[in-house]
Length: 390
Image (cartoon, rainbow, N blue to C red; front, top):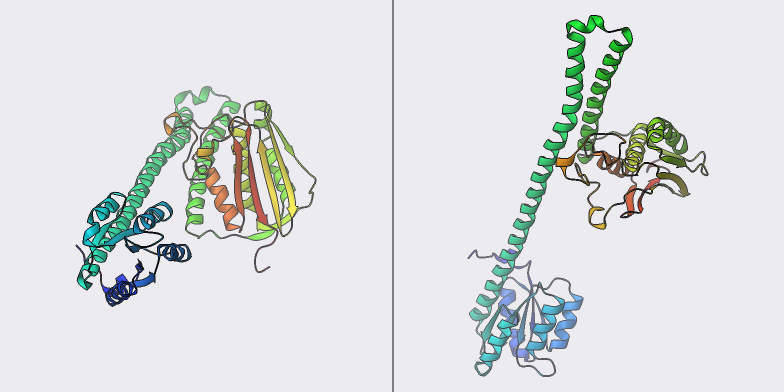
């Protein structure tokens, strides 16, 4: 067993409960000399009051036989309201059977009266070691769970990125092969131009993927530089609406923009805010069935503004709402991943919402999601009108 040094013992707090002042004095003297922080109470009721008032009590030493509220009742109350607190029972020889019953009820240990200093110290040291090991085990368990999450994320990253990058690479390779083969001479100018456009689009798609990945990394490392200027939110939203026009028409989705706050401007990075809004609207399109509706509304609430992106899509289960902003998270398993910017239930790199959240965070704002499965989702972005220092 590792022996704690006195300066380490001072991190632990002990409450001694006994109706005999002499016992309280002995325990307080022995334990403080050993390096522990000690509080005392002359009854069970006073002891529980101290537990309520002091947030950090690690061990309760309580006499078993006390008037009004005995040690059994103290033990029951502690285990009910403060389950992390360990309890050591102090008892006389005549009540050793009661002490064993207390152990069965959750007491960590018991010591027999008359008490000796060494007896008190050994019992408490042993109990503290149990607490320390329990905390270390909890930390190890959390670390293991974190490692498992990282491993799972790594597997998702490899599965998704390999698919997302393989698709444009296949297009480039295939159409470059066509242009390199002998029968290119049989193609007219329109067909050659179409092949070149497909190759250029594939290259652009790869560049966008890599840019998004690096942006998320920079934001996570607080290395992203923002260039603040006056940004007209309605104008930006109209641009995005126009860019999605063909996709919306193809899927017969209606994207309505509330213009009631025309001229609403904020201090922000124009490009990053556009990326953030594009990702949120793109996500709404992906998870709204053909013929659905998306409503975008801005609201002034000085010194902030709110942006509401509401859809009547498939919605998000309560259990998944806390995960959608995590990198590489997808509603469906990565085994069923299929690429697409705006096709229904299409996957992507899985960092669009992560990127959106990090951009909002970098602007000292916040993003929330309200959703009901089968009914739809509302993304709510809150941004300050001005940045600090302006």
